[in-house]
Image 1 (cartoon, rainbow, N blue to C red):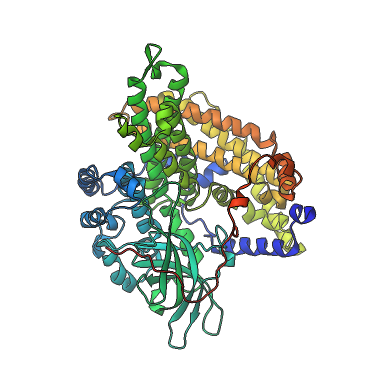
Image 2 (cartoon, rainbow, N blue to C red; image 1 turned 90 degrees about the horizontal axis):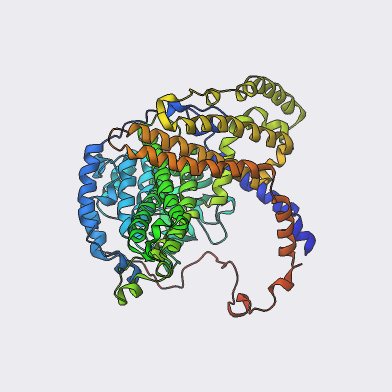
Length: 640
């Protein structure tokens, strides 16, 4: 048992390699457009790529819609959704009438054609009433049918499906299976070609957000390779009401109680060849491309949560008096309020910049979108936690209980539960660290990958050595000095110049540290997840600081207070970045990894004595098994 737990078997190693190979083959290989994030990790602080930020496209149309949406959503009872664990039918119908289901769909197909920026503003707005509404609209448009069709759909597919979705029908994205999470190499849902050109879909999908409501799905399924079929993981548009589709259950969670999330079974579901998106074998590539901008919806919800928490913290800290003084005047509470304010400004700046870059379409934002998703989901959780602490016992009490005692029903405990999923949705923090790290070291792997690849032959290694020699001879000298060392550097930013000088110096420092890590561990670097996670987190702090300074400068005439907020945020971010730099090399990663192996092997069972273990009362497997076949469950789909 101990040996098995401490060292991977040959089969598990093969599975891991296969999973990585599948993901690597699906990621976008080339950088056709500039990327601020890519350059930042290479030690090149390309401020010119983000300053001035691209203009806000379609602002007039967006503001008209946002005003209508605000007027409507302010009258929706978010607490009723929490109590009923259900968004009312009339709310869904009204949102459809407003055009909220077509925010990202082109006007040609009946949508509003909003910019990414206005779309994210809308999500933050509706999420402030109840985050389940934001999750519904986000899953429908950011990763559901509209986005992949926008990217690679045919004109016929767009004409057939998009008007329905813009009009209020709901879509969902189905990738995850009971045994398949972040690495889809073991996908079991199959789509077998038929003799007449269609496909027969069989399988079970888990955690399909909007699954109980959706009339259209994007389903990822494995097409077997055969004559005339290249096979591979493929994306299909599937009618939710097609024969053989069963919504077996609606899942329930600690937060987002209004979320319509399903277990969905497909049994001999006939899917026309015309419903294949992008061609056979392109499913994962489409999914990853969809997430490049699709991930922006989650930080939008986080920004909305931050603003919500800031409002409650500000009003409560001024109202609540202890020992003759408002609690906000005590330093212990003041620090928390400042953290909430600074963090909210930093998250918003980072999101706005990423949206503007996406709308401008002149930049590759795969790193930026991933960074803001990672960063905002982690920071929003801490913000919500600090709000609960500021509210004290009332922060832990439910809104209904507060109202029953005659107090203002502020659901602080709910916001904490609701934002927690963002650290898991659309790529967990741990997976995001690895995905971003892979992109961050792409330039190194493209020139020196074969040197550290144990499977590469001597000829390939020799060629790689030649390429690497030339690249590093040019690149390493650029990491020695830069504009950040000049006292007058970035002086046009006034009091914020010091922070940009820090970002420039730290960008070069981060690139040097990454190079040292590659030189030290070479092919084993991919297993140094603690190191890679810190590299990514430092990059996220630097990107956020850059965005905050650019936002404050661009708005200095209309919102002069932004300079103060940017300065506050950058000081907080600098402290975090410096701690991460220290931890790159001075940490307990090795000790903790070894300890975890001993824990899993059962060496410390004595530490679990004195309790009734959950497994004593919770029978059943950790992972539910499933087999293809007709459903034996009652269909629980919900139709308006």
